[in-house]
Length: 314
Ligand code: BDR
Ligand code: CA
Image (tube, rainbow, N blue to C red; front, side, top):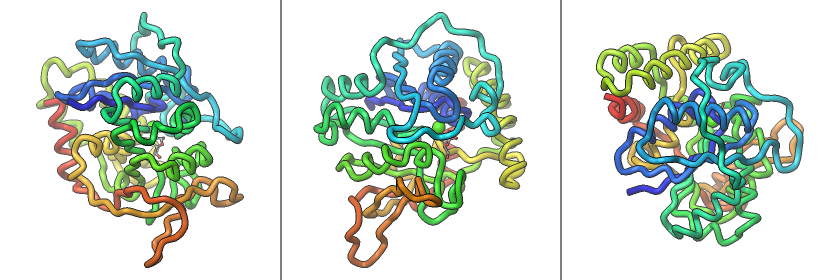
């Protein structure tokens, strides 16, 4: 049994990650905590509640609202060009009658980690603001979380917001630096591996043909929202009828670490640079001195990862 908290900015690929977790036996989602990013934090929460209604898990999953801006600086806007005006590719899901819980996301993470010390796997799929705030509330969190899997950053590939920065780290680089140097057991799943793991229209065809009857509605949602994602990746990245599985890969890695090849690296995240904010500065020298060790995914078995993802719905 894996007790999991998903911290995210729902988002097309966040939605795919959540759906995958919901359809994976042995995973108990203790809560979904929300952060600004792809869209506003309120919109992200609304999307998440609608998605949960669509997927109908057989237990109630609390949704907690968190940070609406970065720790230190006001950064421009959300990403409607990537994720649509509503964050989920402008797919209209019925409004939910449920509301987010009153507790703030950071407090929620701290409480759960204290209730289940050493058991919670935290998967972050957005800015690291909530987790940085949780560390401020409880510095001993570093010893209480079992594992933190972070979708974000890049070492060897170019960035996706600036030449050197990936969106989730770029959106709150100070928070990212605090998390990466905190001593938390971090696994970074960044663009180095997510850009290698593409879901294609052929994969969607397979899902539509072989998906379980009870998954019809969620597969229909994935298909519609991914059309939006495909459009963006075609226009901006020359990737045709396919899109990277950023957030789903991080979630899968939390459950199947063997999908990835990893390397320990000492890292810092630049948060003051004019041209380099959000960049992961990895000390790859023979005798690394700068930063703290985290685990970084450098390789992925992409075919198997896609297989793991699709199988969850078939
Ligand atoms: C990350 O940024 C967001 O747009 C995605 O949801 C993903 O978490 C990829 O850089
Ligand atoms: Ca995300």
